[in-house]
Image 1 (tube, one colour):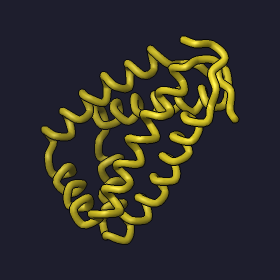
Image 2 (cartoon, rainbow, N blue to C red; image 1 turned 60 degrees about the vertical axis):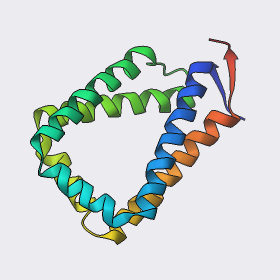
Image 3 (cartoon, rainbow, N blue to C red; image 1 turned 30 degrees about the vertical axis):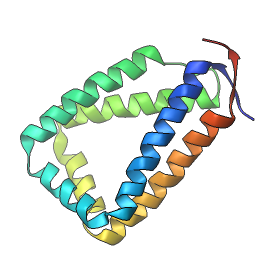
Length: 139
């Protein structure tokens, strides 16, 4: 069992885990559709901008509300917030690199499935840590 300082850490780990698992299952179930969506995203500067703005707010909220590095689980949850924030900044300022990476990842159904499996494992880890962890402080 993992111990962390705050219930919020456990709740965010569960949310991350569930969201990541759902996305991974979608990628595994419909890899061709996921690859086409990535290609559409790359061709749409407006969609890229709107996504960057949305993830900017999400990343800022996560970093401001949970920037705790007190233990491994809190650090992982905080790291996810920072990754989301940095990704949004890159999408705003220099989207070409991220779009190239996403395009390569979605180039074939096999690659989408490979990333789906990797992401599924990541989601399962977050969900397990969130469900099996224990908070020392209630809020």
